[in-house]
Length: 420
View 1 (tube, rainbow, N blue to C red):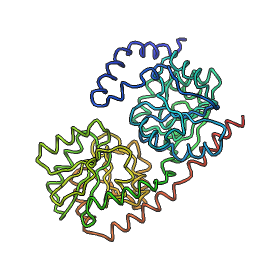
View 2 (cartoon, rainbow, N blue to C red; view 1 turned 45 degrees about the vertical axis):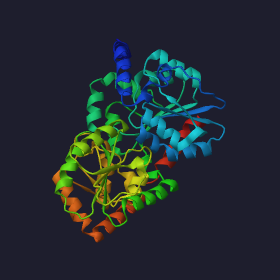
View 3 (tube, rainbow, N blue to C red; view 1 turned 60 degrees about the vertical axis):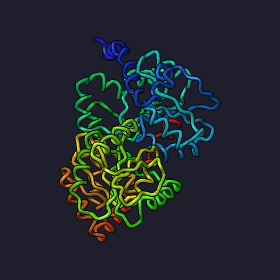
View 4 (tube, rainbow, N blue to C red; view 1 turned 90 degrees about the horizontal axis):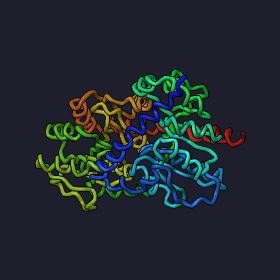
């Protein structure tokens, strides 16, 4: 019977010219995509002087989620070196901001057999950890073949993703079967992974609940709030995606909240200029966060054109809308906003964070709306109801505290593999 990885690998080779074109296309707005290209094909030069524990975190969200786990791994295994691999430049930049030179970092190679073989040969990790939904078929097989235990932790599998993987049932089943262990965020994620063929699946919760807001970010948030104006209502639109800013600005025109300041932080830095152009087209008085100046009363919008400051933005806001949820992008992480006690409003499209959203709404930490009209109505209601905002802040604390513990479960799984 034909090995299902063969047509998959052949398709990768056919896509090779497109990969280079895609890097060039993305580099128009983010030149960092043209740096370290050799690493994407298995060529590395990072110095290695200790045994390696390797974690793969695709981009910013996954990288921030590793924080509590990396801290505990470094304390538990001080004779090992932590390697963080990424797929995007923003993920790599987040790693640099969080960890500095205390960890190794590199791009994970594309899933070509020769590239993953060179990666494993160079770093020789004693253990590998894939975060969330990273199922790379040749990489997983190469780890299995070389005896490198590979874990899938903080795993999530939405219904939409499960349907996609089910189209390649044998390929997916073989890959999941070659993982040393899988620990899912929720029982639903675990069930969908099991239906796809995973066998060694447990439920660990979500590492994002274990993140502790950095004191420096909390202090920066207090400074931002002073710049925004202590007497103004500050509405943060966090991690917005293409098309959502238009809906938000349409709603802004209909808001009747005296002194309201809208702070928009696009999800991707390459869109900062695009959103600035949108504001200019509408003749909306705005100021960039990067100017670091006090915001005058006539400014209606602050454009959050900075990276790695989400905790500070959350701290500075009265209410936060979590982007990627008004339009069908699947939503973004709402846990960080709740971790600093900021009430959350979220749209209908939350399949990437369905369980966290359900728990937040149930705890009174978040309100879910169905469209931009519902968002406008909630902002109007909450801005004039200090008691309701206070209750939501209390709900945030309970929501986060009651769901901690995923880091401890991760360490138990890692320890079990090392003991073997």
